[in-house]
Image 1: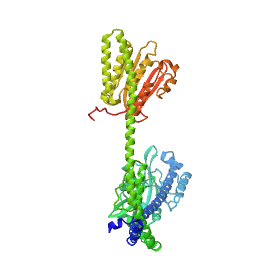
Image 2: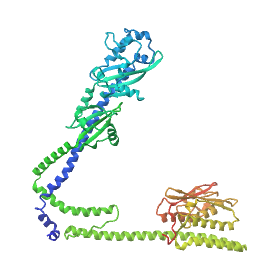
Image 3: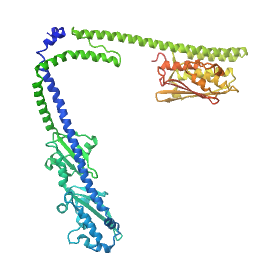
Image 4: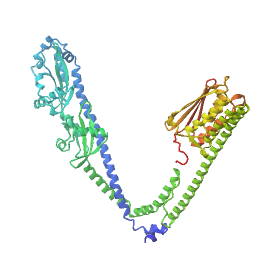
Length: 607
């Protein structure tokens, strides 16, 4: 049956598969939607909760900022400033009816709105007893220093160097909470009275109910928990204190959540998964934590999936499912062929596995595989031809240089023979023989840097034999570069050009040539410097173009050897980044930079 089905034509397959594929779209769609809709629901809810948490954090920051501003306004009061600095006289402090004291009491009391700010107290030991009572005999802003000594927050100040502290109710004493408020912002301020320095505590008490209300209003989903925790793992405020006690995370974990991501992250507590977000509260060391249970989101996602499936079955119908499923079974194979054909855009065509079916798509795959094999064969032939052409061009250019050097050397040997210098003729022939032994190198196109430097040294030796040691030659190349690769006869044409058209262009016919080299990233760089006559700009511009210099440039002659050397390097390495660079100033000498890739030399037969 499988073979019979595989060999059917497309129209027959449409009819045959009609009944078999009725149920498949429902299964596929259910599987697809169960993940997709769940992810969409969770992502949307988390994003919504994150936005709500950001707004809540901003509201809490605003509340905290109001408390800090109230504290700052009290501290900046002129009377308060004079008091702590010791500028206020004892006579003024002793006068209960003093206008400055009355104005200060009035200013401080006006800041207490009972909605947010529940009380403001200043704990200090003052020389005037009347400061601890207002004009009506009631308790004033000032309280004796002894009243704060037993509090938890006083112990924190004594054991640390902090100058301010936001206190949850845990830090405050029972009487302090009953008389003043459940949360406080306290600042430690130096007090100078009669030349004696002591400590004053400015405490701004504020309402925890306001903070709780802000957190309760941030709840967008049932079972969501938002709470604020202090650096000492105390719960400052919560949208639900009972639930917070069960799912509380410590301060270090909250900091870790905040540091790891600005978005919500998953966290497991008591085998229950929560989407957890942590936010810093400005001006404090508190962290606001929002925890969103994952289980209700999953239930909501499942409910959405169920409704969608009902809607889908109601409006689409079995006929649409059949048509869609049937077309998909056919087009999948065609799409695979199209995708494989698109591979040509990024490289060679890749054949497909042979089709086991004899229908139209099977014929298409067979035709595509035949086309791929033919294209790969043609591309291989083209690559081989291009490589052969590159090698042929390289050898042709090299052949142009070898006769050029040989002609000059034989001319020098001929001159030595005519002057009856038999010993120097022998020395020159031996040097030339060694030079060509290195040059031929059994037909290899590349040699080591060490052998290339030996070649150019032999060339300069031969030239000095002819011109009475007028050429002072120096090689300064690090030993670690000597085992790298370079095409044959790169340095010799450059040195020859430096001698012939640079040094010999000078009136005294004498000069210096220096070869240096270094490793630069993935390249080797060599610099051939001479102190010859230099090269005019019009000749320098033509030197590496392949064109000859103008006839009226006289002594600079042809640039064919230099151009061939430059072209050989670019052909050999297949990149325009490598080759020669000339820099010269007339009368100042010439520098030639040679740049090649850093590649270790491997002797023939050792690769």
